[in-house]
Length: 387
Image (cartoon, rainbow, N blue to C red; front, top):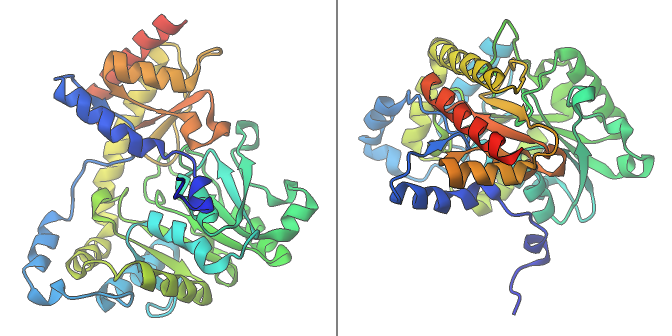
């Protein structure tokens, strides 16, 4: 008997989760596993702050969605310092159990059956997952290198654009590493007003930028809070992936609807964690400096190593990834499988982010430069065997 709902049956396989068992097996076999799969940064920062807060018995109570006022105030302060954006900590800030959770629940808060959400591909699987679970329609928007990996809703057929109620945007982009300027976001805000859709701006890599590029917030655009909600995370910039700590800011009405949905799904973030997050955000600019320097060193080591095996990658200006084109005729899924089984190397096939990612692999810069060089050497051996 098929006990899955129609919505659950429509969900694609979540490939990153499937890898966990394989990685466990390889480690049990004594293999020298190098994991460049998940964007799981390794530079722990806030451990002692959390430990101190956890000793306070008051921090073990229910947080509910209101959470810790100090955390919401720290978010508002960070947004003002970093972007010059003013948000009200009580009505325009919502703590999340990781930005993935908020992005997946958002469609349930604002979409009706057969409303359209524009989902960029390749892209973060939470976008399509949340859309399908809301019984809405996912309009897959292929991202193309020759168009700068930009989403342009006006390229859709008029009848689909008329039904569009939500557009997911993510820059600096996972997995393509593409970046945008404020001029692109200004155009998107104007389109959202004209066509009456909401923008979910996924911005977890805004502080992991290089070579003078500074990532903007969509809320820097005048009037953007009328048509946009922005998602941030402490996972990437502050190496807190497993902590599940994030927030959304922007349109107060939308955040209130999301808060209502979340009220039936969770009871809020651990209060001690919120205290640790607040302390982290209060010194974000200082803390992120060394993180950026580390990822820049790893980026450069990876790009140079790839060039040595004949694979050219333009150094990305943002994120913690390399988006690597494979030689013609090399299937990305088969390549990733061979890397895993033959070389105990985890890389993500581009096609796990959607069919538009075929022909690429994504490397997460989550190991040292020496281990990255070793990883690329293993990739080179696989390429030689597959040619």
